[in-house]
Image 1 (cartoon, helix red, strand yellow):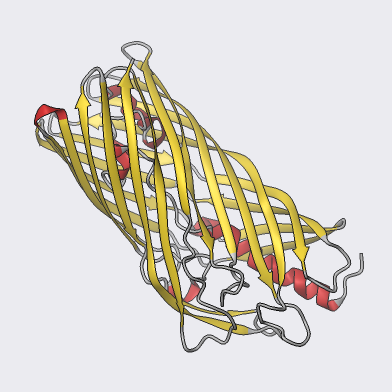
Image 2: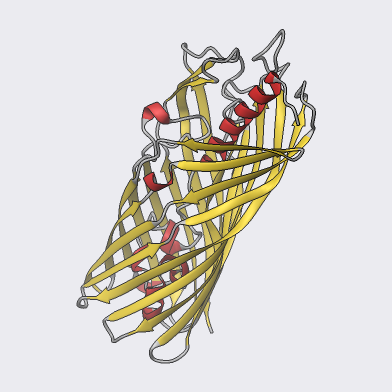
Length: 426
């Protein structure tokens, strides 16, 4: 196929925009819809010996869970993300309103003790992802108009109890990653870089399956201290599907296919529980996420049999996290917990784009429930995530006729996670 200069420019812009948007996909999902997760700001993940969600967060914890259990429930995510364009923006359009998505996410987990040594578990939950929808006239629409990235994990796991103090665990997740994406594209001629003349690129739910393994241990140092650590492997996917064009001329095709090779960081997560009395737990957690190994993204756009290959590099950096939580067992089997956590940003201010509006993050969480040992429990939990100012200052399509600047910050940038669950013993 012989492409015109305008066609080649269009596909180059599409490739650059697509790669960054698919990588970002909005806020990462920490909460997994259980009180052990939402109610502690995630601090209990590596030292979870109370809840069958350990099948995903640290399989070694299943060895110390009381009895055979099944928990089901879910959470509802409410994202509020309002961008305010600065005076130095040269792009035409609006600030986009609320770009955040509201999403229900179900989940369930279970564990069964096979004998005194072995315990098996399973689960299904949202692993990571997020969504953005700024609207078609957004000032940064050539970076992001709409992007919804989801990842659901189906997990099987097992733990081996060495003795009353030490256990090891292993889990394997089948992760389905899917992307729905719409990108505005400038068109040559009069009125370029205005919403009225833009073209639109549609990428509808391209997806792939990948594996992720989890390897951890729990060590009860003494009745007061419990140490836990878990390694979650990277997730590598190649998203495949169709690309459609609307009002994008002149090009000699109306449909292409796309393959995007992506990687999501591996994680080392370490936690410590201090129990000065049987009724109180103080929980400490730190983690490290290896993002700077995944700076290069490969993309192939196949236009009527003519492949266009790209390899783009991004300035992602490793991130770290610290969390603290308190869990208190009250009279009449009631439980309350609260937690706070800090997550560092995956990009510096100079590299942040509207399709990756994450900054340093602070989480504040609370949970309340009732536990009847050997029978059932229920819980309600909430988490508030402040995702920072998310300052943006980017030049789009540099050294082309479409060069323009997007500058500003997020006036509102937060996420609320509401959770309810029920657990029973069988």
